[in-house]
Length: 482
Image (cartoon, rainbow, N blue to C red; front, side, top):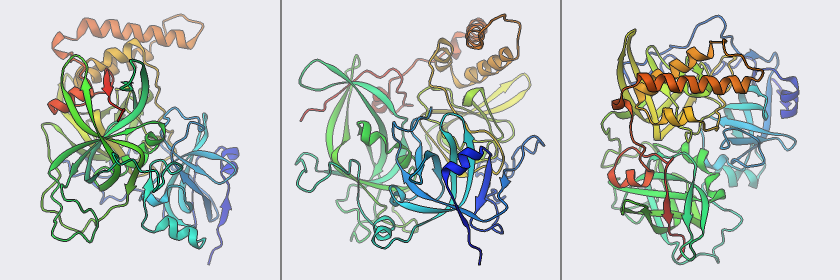
């Protein structure tokens, strides 16, 4: 029986190497199986880039584990993505991602049995947790691995502090989740506006009152479309956890009903809003339990896609998937995971399909929108860099967001061509980059026909009209007052 070494995060960061490790040197690496193929006929199993420049992660020559705690995002962790899970061993904290996610892992000490470590300049490194188990510490283990409740704001939650208006419950299957964004809101008392961070969740809910596994006389028909707004800094920290639950059953209690008004359109939408008393419940039935209605509905050209990442370009805006398949992450509001690396297997939900013909052939474009969520099913076994998106909004990025998906793809290819052009004299690289952005914009504007431009639609108006949601131009009055 091997005795694995317990490695510290500081040792990995100081070493500065991209490595993979496990509790046993005989355990197989987390290389994706060829059986994990996409249901889409355009996607090929094993379509990982086989270029010799793509090297495998160097394995440690001895068994090693990492012991620490998983936590929700925090502003104390400097990260361009802002909404990453944190892993801390008590001495150092870095970004992380985890497979086989359970809500109960949050705030609990775990032993990481199999993992990848990728160095990152901005925060020291990124930990990909492949296999893990709870640390056996008596009552601590029962609290973490057992069934319980998860208050969105634990420090404020109390049975004696429950507002009678925070009495609404929602339970159903989570259909989609929006990125985090800041919305200008009115407090309902004065005319002062406040910037409120939040994200929107769409749930196909069951209208029965019981959401426990012991519910009698209900087969859980998920037919009612319900929207929940996670409101405030603390609630927003749950974004990566809720993203992992897309496609699964969820239950939330302690919600309020509110109306959202779209300025200039006169439309309103009834939503549930989280409060300081809101609680996230664990899944209340197993995956094997049958439901009376299917919750998978394909609307137009928006569907799901599973495939391998072959390359990441232009600071994460353009992701090459399987043969002749490209994923566009062009909206600045889209949160991107570090684990979307060359060689990883990802599952994309609620993405737009565009079969587009160019002079060099036909390309399937996957356009990510407000409802798109991406989860990594297998981490990359290769020594490839992490995706770090830039939140800088310039004239080129705003121009790209105004285009249709095929035009966006073409413009990004033009931008990549200008990147290779070194004829612009400049003493500062940032100045040269800005000039290339302006040149790209000017050239694209002269070539793209007016029919390839599309109007920006605010997210609340889109909900009312059942269209694609976009948060960038939202000006919303959220009635917070009771």
